[in-house]
Image (cartoon, rainbow over all chains, first blue to last red; front, side):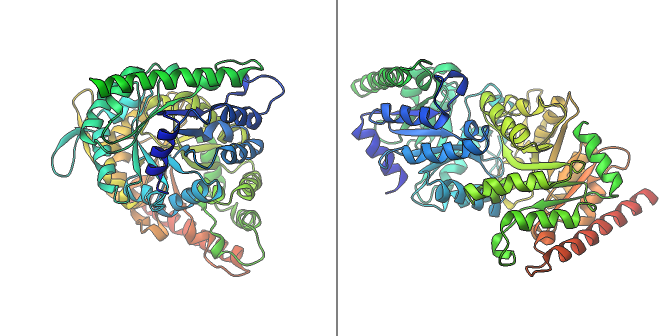
Length: 274
Length: 274
């Protein structure tokens, strides 16, 4: 099954646009649990509430060898019908990206990956070549430094003036011959999100940045979701997985996920009505 | 010791600007050796000929668990006085980059890392904060797709028009308060290399792309090396480590490394004379 179909199927089954970001911080976990046990219990408690999970590689790599095993354990704990997104932000020259794609799609069997566009087409192509898997290209990220380069107004080869993030979105759409490309646009940049959604009504958009990063949920859904087309995958990480640092963390994670899923659905419903 | 001092010391001791890229491809290795054994023998055979080693994470990650152990083994096999560069091209929002920096600098103890600038200042700052370690920021990469975005002419906040790769170089120079930043500029783009070296005479430049990628060695040294300042770190990978796929691979790797080191030195000498 192609990644877009798998995302849509999970989203319909669970009636959810919520993606939970698995960025476990051991300083906020109850004592006696390791990172794999903690994260697997979050998955058990929430897997009927989400359209996807996004696993942040950095938090596992920072732990060295035991992080590697935890990453494998967490990946294999995600139910087969829930899409798994490797938030790895990879990208390198062709033969190197090919090796990264093997790592993410074959060794670890993720359904999708985030990639960085700075190195251009041939750095992303090896990921796209896995036609059933998904490739979310960083477009306008959720962090403060996003403006340093992504907002610079550039002229493309046809002489058209657009900020860099729009140039990236346009190229992503051109490269989408297999229908497996999406974009990453942060909820902290609602105007940019709106521009991107209007220019690319059918592309799936992965939207991080609500919760601790301060993004606006209402605008993320209104501007990111297209009832007639492109899916919005609304990610929240710390707000859910670290809702409580006590022994009842999984219960609180489920409560937080359910509340956010419902908030998102209320906004969607008001869009369809209006 | 600061990374720049460590690079200069290794370069003087071995009279070399050569960096060997450790991108092992198991299809080109003699039978009976694993990736760690192969790569450690390359290091043993060449460590008096280089100013640094650059280890490409992708080729280890593609092997899963045994790749992780091989990466640790290879890293710890590099002599303490030879700088080790993690070619990982990381970059993410602040708290995530912090975790990546921990992975590369603390878990694996690399002296330097390559990072991707697309996400801006706060995605790179956690790496820069390790003041003794080095941060090589992708500027103009060696691959064909580099032109897709890096060459787009942009206006910066002061209204100055420059291609994106020059904007990145300028920001890198501004961020270099700890003196531990360098740039990555491919040998396949000699004109861009020349422009960057003239604009930033003191920044170290890591130059991949000679050998299999078709970069011009003479121009890489002439345009990248500044006898009065910024070091050029000339990387070659496959041309050296896979010079032979027979049992005598280490001998051939040494021969290829020595020849390339000498070629580079001939070019440098002609520059000092002229």
